[in-house]
Length: 82
Image 1: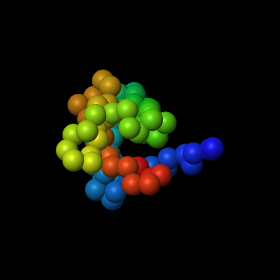
Image 2: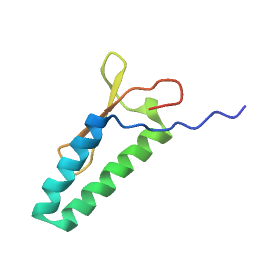
Image 3: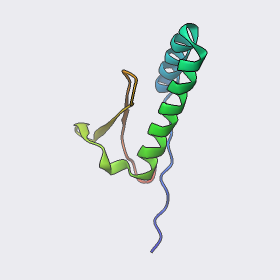
Image 4: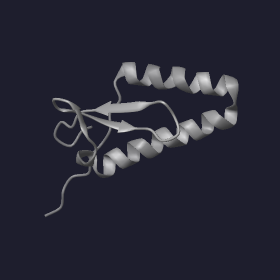
């Protein structure tokens, strides 16, 4: 039996938050902003690959703590969509 892979959908608020955070780091250092971008994408990939492996923060909401940055990705799993 093959399982359908998970997909990730960002809310509008999450996209705005990410954009603002990226701009904040970019103003200080484009290199740091690039590292931040890569860490966020790594987080999304880790979540997509194994979404149930990260702790529950509240009810059905899970959290992924981004390495090297004070940033947390909160998410819910609904069918095959994160």
